[in-house]
Amino acid sequence: MKVVVIQGPNLNMLGIREQQVYGPMKLEQIHAQMKDFAGQNGLEIEFFQSNLEGEIVDKLQECYGDANGIIINPAAYTHTSIAIRDAIAAVNLPTIEVHISNIYRREEFRQKSMIAPVCASSLVGFGPFGYHLAMVGMLQILNEIQAMQEAQKAKA
Ligand code: DQA
Image (cartoon, rainbow, N blue to C red):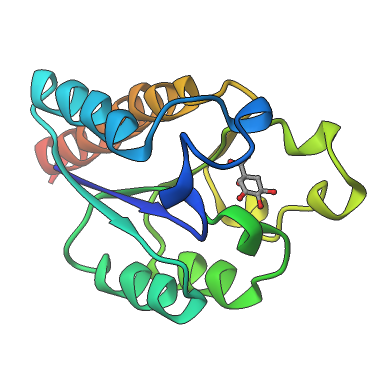
């Protein structure tokens, strides 16, 4: 089972940018923790970060036929990108949205997520720990899908 983690614009600046909002942890440290969890639970994991909307759309499309689940923080594109929302809907894979900050407690323009309606779940405001929670949630979703597929096979 393969999970692809997609990180949007400016998340490569974690640990430097607005530490009072996003904390001191760097993206590489977050990814190292996710990789450990994946390894402990028999999941393959791939990480992708881009500052460009089209590259994120391309990566989402690549997930079709290649990944079993997606964890995504589209960062500022969360609030604007119909293209990213459509790509998530198109590939139709279980997708979990993560935001380090609680976007619903911030400026009004951040309080709307274009992608939430096409995601299985959204985790906001847990800081970098939200990515770990997303891994736990994704494992649960993938196990449920696998159990359902096995039950269907046994019936056939
Ligand atoms: C963010 C919230 C967005 O509003 C912001 O543009 C980001 C990070 C978060 O993780 O809290 O870049 O997605």
